[in-house]
Image (cartoon, rainbow, N blue to C red):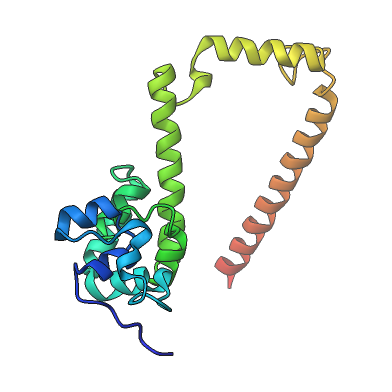
Length: 198
């Protein structure tokens, strides 16, 4: 595969390919790329801008900075816009997906983990901001509402309570689970004793 040719760094064509807005390019270079980048359209004909963004990060951004941006994303210090800005892809928020970018950089698994942590941290921060706790079931009003819902739907405030439609099924499921665990522990104990006796 042919290596993608990058334009000289921070030139108008480079900034357009990296997804910068017209205003930011004008502010940075003093040159107006025109409406919809009309003044550089002929130079950019045939340039795969998605691949250009990836190649820019691969070639020009140190791997340590890429990993640092990923870790800051995971800890909610940076959002998607912040990560892209950290990598020099200002205003490209709708032009490239983080998952596609990090997969192309060989960090797909690390991104999945970071994205999961980001989502959890974001939800937790929202819960704390709205309710003052990271888990709504720590609040009495939620516990009471859940108990009322169970009572309305299943006939008792708690799953194991007398009168609950789910009580018999829950007891049966618990017995099966307990028996399964006992069998597994028995097998493990016999295997361990056999190993020790040999």
